Amino acid sequence: MEHIRTATAALATTLTAVALAGATGPAQREDGGPGAQGGPWAGGSVTTVGKLVTDLGDGRTGVCSGAIVDSPSGSVIATAAHCLTSPDRPDRPRAAWFAPGYEAGPGAGSGALGAEGAMEHGWKVVSYHVPPGWDVNRPLEDILPHDYAFVTVEKKQGRSVQEEFGANRLDFAPVDPGSPVLPMGYPAAPPYDGLRLVHCSGRAELLTARTAHAANVGGLLLAPCRLTQGASGGPWLQDFDAASGSGTVVGVMSVGSGDGQVLGRPFPAATGRALYAEATAV
Image (cartoon, rainbow, N blue to C red; front, side, top):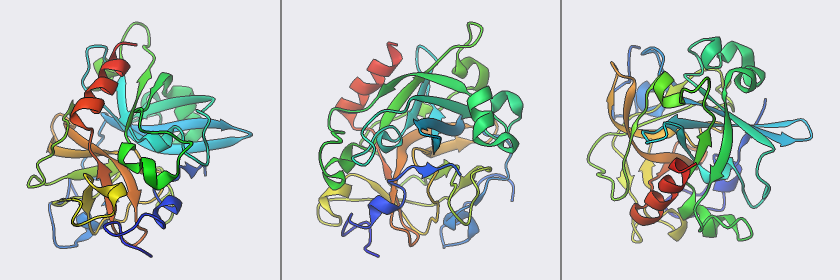
């Protein structure tokens, strides 16, 4: 399989496709240990991170990940654009729900309840926000640099999801690659089952035109990290604080090579901020 830094042809079959339904704290190792490769999060509930479940019609259910980000409305979730639309699936979901702290109990969308539980107990998405460059009429490799998005969710009894569960800070490019990253998500393809929060950790490499295929320039490369389908859209966090269960979102899970390399997509300074403002205004 081709590597992320040199090609994208093989990537469309891994984390760029939505997976169809079907220790204490983060490990800090950067030497290929279990925490770096991808392992269940054992540090307690992280309510600012959750599962994004989409109704694709015809009995199909899409599974991705996302994170609450601090906003004036308190209702904004960061995720990946391909979790919402793609060249193979250009129509937006019929409906979508975000289940914060997926393992935190029925009120947050218990993992024991599966996708149906996330739909029943999650926060319904009321608007979708993808950047102008995410044009699903073009080939996937042409639009991958724009694989970031926000969704805005409902309020419940007058309270926002942020008021109920907290939020992460949001940062925009350029990202400091010297600070360790903590990707999190709910991978649903083997060896994972989508029912538990999984993480990797380590120092990422910022890809440039000299080191990567054009589709991946500006992305954050982490290896080894064996998160699979379903982790798409999950946050790449820096400065994570276990006490508050939050950190700074510096990107979202975009693609993986299938051989232990994953790429986080930062939010560009200009278009990312404009998209964030759009999501917050709902």
